[in-house]
Length: 128
Image (cartoon, rainbow, N blue to C red):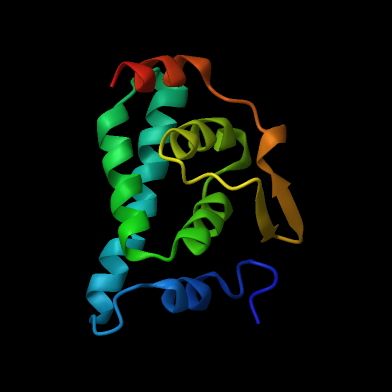
């Protein structure tokens, strides 16, 4: 049913991947909204060169705590702009959440080895 993640099925896919079966919809919405914060922090770094590394790590970890791991990765790669994959990859690599292949996002598989690593962020994370 979810071979390809796209605009038509992202919400249903996310609900099915949610790890809290007895939650109310507002809890899911709050956890799903975390993507917006992740994207905002990535953009802040990309545009203003302001890295809130610990805050970004925190949001990513909390996101993975409530969504099944492989699904969380697919959701993030679907929602985050392709131009920002290098930043996302660097954080997921640091947390050991990064697979070799992110399966079927808008009709294509993403090979993570083909995405560059942001060396500035990697340096910051290595200091933690």
